[in-house]
Image (cartoon, rainbow, N blue to C red; front, side, top):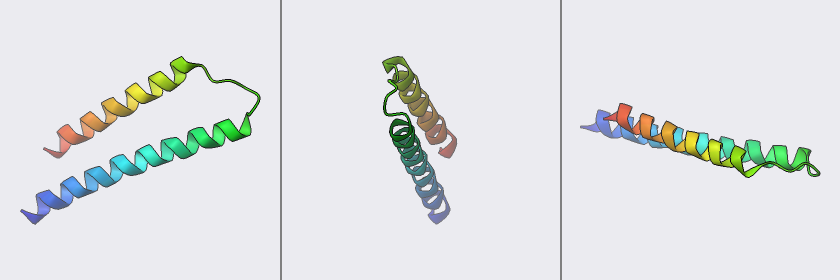
Length: 62
C-alpha cells in the first residue's frame, strides 16, 4: 500500500515541478523580451500540451 502512495506522491511532485518550471521559463522569456509580444496561440498550445502531459502521467501511475 505505501508503495502505491509513494508513486502517486512522486507523480504529483513531478507534475507540480513541471508546471513551476514552465511558469519560470515563461516569466524569464517575458522579462528578456519585454518589447516583443507573444501570440495567444503559443500560450494555448503550451497549456494544451501541459494538460495532455499531466493526463499521461496520471494514467501511468494507475
